[in-house]
Image 1: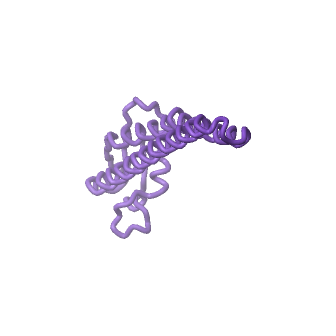
Image 2: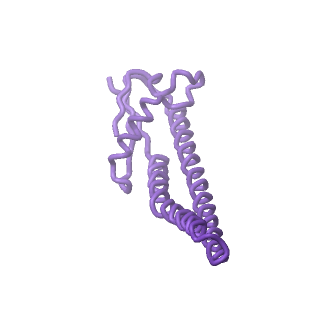
Image 3: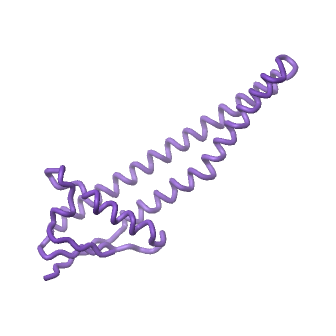
Length: 156
């Protein structure tokens, strides 16, 4: 992936006085390019500029961005796992309740309790089967970005 800039300021967010945060345009461009590239293919970033760039500062900012993305994905995984376990437990409790309350309460209420239990278990399975895969894919993308090699070139 080749990124051509006219000056170093384009790499950083204009609101960050310390220039440690990558610009939204740069992040958007990198993410869009990473989205279409095969996940197993190694990606390199080449920054082309007319002027010298502080390479260490950019690499540090890029690493900070990648670490933040991994932290977000890891948080999503924890939340998703907690949701899966919670919904499964709620479902099991309601199914057990419906079994224990058979012949003791109105059949309509019994069906409602059983349906809530079944729905909760389904939601847990849906989260495990579908949402977990998306989060895992996002984690792979973040890991790929973290392992990206960054090169710099001065073009005159």
